[in-house]
Length: 288
Image (cartoon, rainbow, N blue to C red; front, side):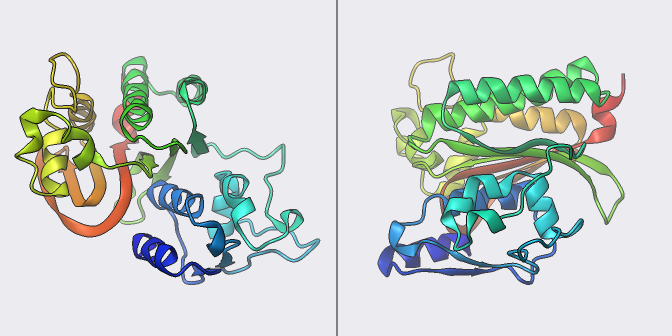
């Protein structure tokens, strides 16, 4: 939906309204997509009128303790998109300085460069240690975040950089607690990136095919050996912990289920750039 709206905005730019009044839950993947979308709209489309139950809160009104507004506030969402919304700054929800949410491991963070990545990695390492994650699993989580962040900075060719966020939550369906990481960019996409390698140029018939190649060990845009394989490593870590990976780029999508070791690629509604989510069961990350 956001991709279709972005196309419309480019064709006939005018102030837009985003109706999320029916939204009751946003996971990190959705928050990353929304943050990227709002930060890449043409000036003619701004400020965006956001419709969300209870938003904006009335002056002097205490923000809700539950629901989408509360969750977005705890994730630091308003700080990164507030300037794009048709709401006075003093009415945007703010996080009390004393408030912390142990489920929010990395709030909405825009990765403009290496310094931001290094700060994020140090923070997540300290938090995971305090939550009782064992040293090996901490290393794997940081490896995933480091690899994905490096991909954004090295391959996306996006001046804005990328957006990352990480949290833990309990599945309402199974009761299992998960660590969920999501990162995305508004760059050129995996197909264009990996297509610069002549080895794959004639094999890439679609964005879905490009995703399948990108997760192969050692495959990258570089013609020389010794580079690439990072996305394959992400899938390997998901397999180790029985987690899952979802990737989107262009009009392609890829899913990988670690427990059954099944991978699927398929066509999907088009979107700009690349976005990924990895979910790992928290129980395996805390065992010795």
